[in-house]
Length: 172
Image (cartoon, rainbow, N blue to C red; front, side, top):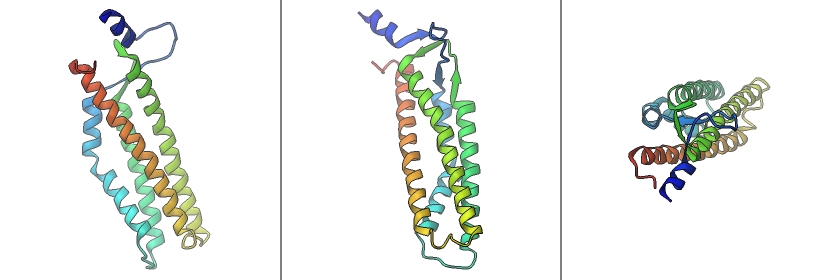
């Protein structure tokens, strides 16, 4: 019975489906999350800017610049995660971990595209002189993005935990 359970969970990476399997380096992935304080600080700064009632002459420019910096930080964050935290075709895989890792890795593209679209939308609104009127929409769209990112991060944290448990033999 134990062999059946194990064979359902672990497989040689080259199976008949032709799909590439993904595993994670849980330690690197966790470290990337812990050390990227600029990203977390930038998220907090933009959140504060969206909530503030500051109507200084340069607030629109500062907001656009803050979003563009955030976009660049996300590009670096996702590149680090995908370069060091995820890897394809491991010798042995946990099929559940692989499926979840594939899903989470594909989230990176969607999240990055969303932050890019927000940046373009805000810059265009500023260029057209409509950013002040769209301030509440900016805040709502950013909070929606943050919610998506939080869900993604939570799922990645669960994956890291499960991967650690499997590696240590406590994932039964």
